Image 1 (cartoon, one colour):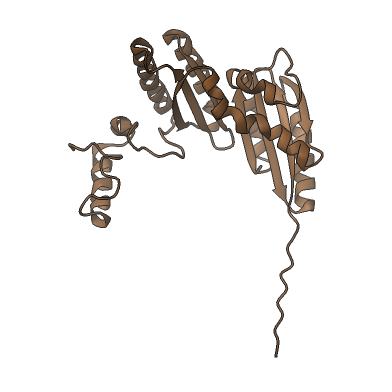
Image 2 (tube, helix red, strand yellow):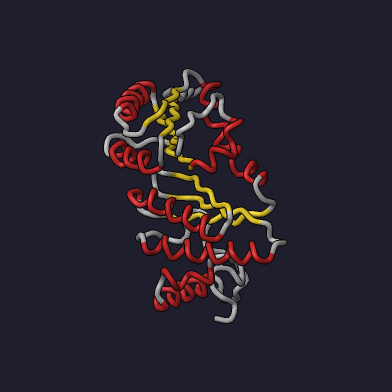
Length: 256
């Protein structure tokens, strides 16, 4: 006796949109309204400095007043994508400060719209040979506030700082570009990072979104988590790692 099992897959499709705004404030004000209606598969943003880095990767020229870019994508079965895409078009059309919207008609055009976002990190080294890349999270309503703070720090310390990330969950990648061989520049970058972390916490955010604490952020952990909380974490770790052989010297200070 033969038993034949056939799996019938529901074809998955996607809709990809790229929207240009005059400022990050205008872009983020639209995000909150959009997320009340649909849940996009992707909702990425780039600030103006990030756009300057990859503008040659875009399949079109940026309007002169462009201050931010949103890259949005919906996916699912055909009916779901059609519904969500319609909501996306309507919401984007009402966005204040909107300069232009591009909608991919096929997979090739979708790949073109994503090309600049994917090229951003490696392309950033045209600015400086080194980078401090910090992932932080703030409430979505505070994204524009944090980006403004980053710009102020950039001006105050005379260093390049650009931002991009996942606007849908407030996960922001803040990149401080520098030359570590320049001692003054390195010191300025470290000071800027410390001030940045303070601002993240003031805005009700957290110091790590997806890359973890590791070595570079462990000195700041007690700013966000109480001593009691850290002590509890250490006790939990000791249960599963009594010999401290799993990533020793990460997260918790070695002498603590």
